[in-house]
Every structure is written in C-alpha cells, then in structure tokens.
Length: 137
Image 1 (spheres, rainbow, N blue to C red):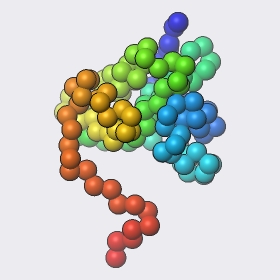
Image 2 (cartoon, rainbow, N blue to C red; image 1 turned 90 degrees about the vertical axis):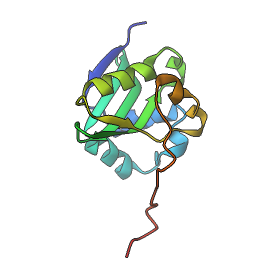
Image 3 (tube, rainbow, N blue to C red; image 1 turned 45 degrees about the vertical axis):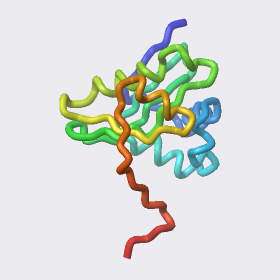
C-alpha cells in the first residue's frame, strides 16, 4: 500500500468530516456544525494529509507561528489505515515544516494518552482551557 503525504493540500470540509467520522475524533469535534468545520479547514495554517490514491486517510491539522510553537489541533487516521505508521509520519512531516526551536503541542484524546510518550512527547499538566460559554469580563 502506497501512502502519499501532502503539505497544505486543499481539502473540503466534507472530506475532513468524513475522515473524522471514520476515525475516533468525530466524537470530540463539531462534525454536525458545517460552518465550524469549514472554518477549521480554512483557518489552520499547516495541514499535512495522507492519501491512498484519491482517498483522504489521515490528517495533521495545526495552527503555528513556525518558530516557537505549533498546536497540533487534529490528528486523525481512518480506522482502516490505523497501526500502519501513518499518524507517526503525519507528525514527523509536520515537525519537518517547523523551525528548529518550534515545539509541537497537542491535547491527547483519552484513548491515545499512552501513545504520545512512546513517540517522545513529554506530559505537561499545566494546560488550561477556557470554554466558549465562559466569557471573560
């Protein structure tokens, strides 16, 4: 099986949603909100995708300044293509696009919490999240 990796290759919101639904990520993403999904696809500034022929089988979608930090917002691999090293390669290609001092940062899905230490990630317990309904005044 040949997998092709593409950097910042355009995908539609529908392709993104279909991939999320065929991975474990759809349960934690607003896949039923087309405007939000469209905004996610259009506004991430680094996207690495994995393709099997013309089928999107993986994505690493990030927001980054390319110099200090890169937030890997979505890492998804189609369930039929998992355990083939695609997720690792998506992260590697993402990292190759970044400057030498740039950190890769992510929030792990509960089921993947034991996966990231195997790749060399360190755990940081100081992450804080402000939900949209918590308005700062």
